[in-house]
Image (cartoon, rainbow, N blue to C red; front, side):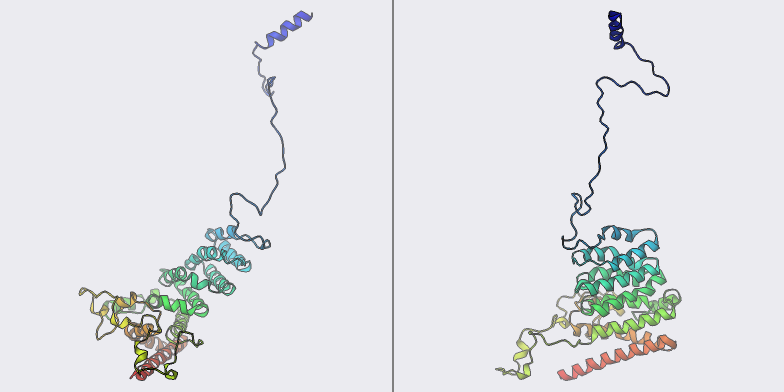
Length: 363
């Protein structure tokens, strides 16, 4: 019996087993069970695939990387809530604000009015939290601001100047020193005002006033913010005297004309000589050319506006005539628009009086 059993066991290795439906196949003799369970250890503050975005001292702050990615969400309600969440959880680490500004500023051209309002509130909160933030990112902010002011959608244009008002309020000097001419051109496009004196631009503005000029409340707000922008750009701010400024009347000089040969105390003091401005080709229309020493629009676009005298010169030579003409037309409409236009006209007259008094003092 024993020998027969051994023979049957040896034959099993060379026999093919029949598989039955519903039953698992017999596992081989050399099978090794590799199934096991293990508990994962989660360390949310440590990762080998993501760099640390804040020092160890800010453990209580929220990681905003996920929320910043939601600013591109397809739902307007989600974008609005994300902006509100970021505003209420602003970090103390200054390096994160660069990512916040670069991710959220494009929403100034968002289709939703609530999203744009939340963005303006966020930018104001960031600027109040981190001093100098708007100055560092002014170029990118003004780029999208100009895009919003000249946007094809009327509601986007209507809220664009709210961002401009925030910049004028919190960071006026970097704004007007670098982007005075660009913003003035965008303002003429926003209000559908003709910048040149040719008939084509006048007729174009008349035809597009109804379609591009937006509502009366928006236009009144635009004119009010324009007045604030002109005051910030064309009036001297009351700042303490710097160490570089010198009152020559109290200094004993070897010669009365010595101050004329000293180093200039203002930037671009020789801009009126047009040393670094290309001559305008003859093919340019007469509205773009300079006459009697006046600055043309093309020259103004290539000039630096760091100096307040340069901004005043550009204002009087390029924008003054068209601005007064269009504001006087707005006064005739009456109501809130007329009141704001009158205020803006009085601001322009103050600028003219200040320039005249400065010119008389030089004589």
